[in-house]
Length: 261
Image 1 (cartoon, one colour):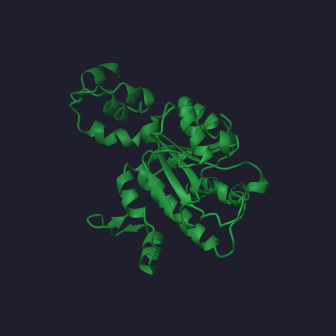
Image 2 (cartoon, helix red, strand yellow):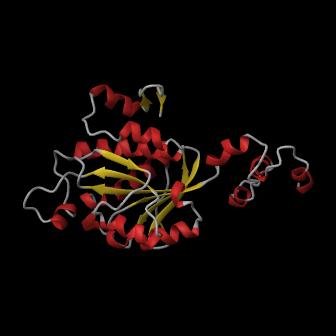
Image 3 (spheres, rainbow, N blue to C red):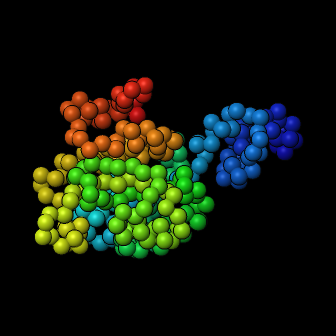
């Protein structure tokens, strides 16, 4: 095999690793920077490892609360792609699978919200992910209406203690995130009681819609289409009926992008 690799005209361990069945992170890391093989760049997204971490609090009393919407998205992805998130690794419930052709770790930190980084940092270190490209953090956002989502490539914690701890532990704000709106705290409400409270009957359909949108956004982000996901989902207006149909059918009708998502 080594002779075949040495004699390969593409001069890329990254590409040859795919041909001869030695795909893995070692092959990725060994790729020659100035490879003459054009396929190597196209294959880069196919063998990277991603972590999608949804934030929340462990315990039945916190199930389906506003602060646990990140856990809810992980559950939705796990259900859609038949990934069991039952193993405990690095203070998180985790599951391994493939989404949109990418190897993915789904994670729900069990450190409680305000210490989320104490789980995500060792997960990122263990799987050697590039936090700027291969880490997606999902959290609740009280500045967004229920079900609205906002995608960011990087940024501050915005007052969210879970994100604040992750930034502190990673030493960087440079990681992708999906923020799902849970509604603004009503005047006079205690903030902690509000985010640890459950959604109203009227809010549930909006949150279900938001979760479906966030699943589509995560799929696009895993495919390297972060900008498209931002353009498509960073909206503050309600969906029209046609947009709802398109979402369920997985169709993007934005200018120049008509097709399935």
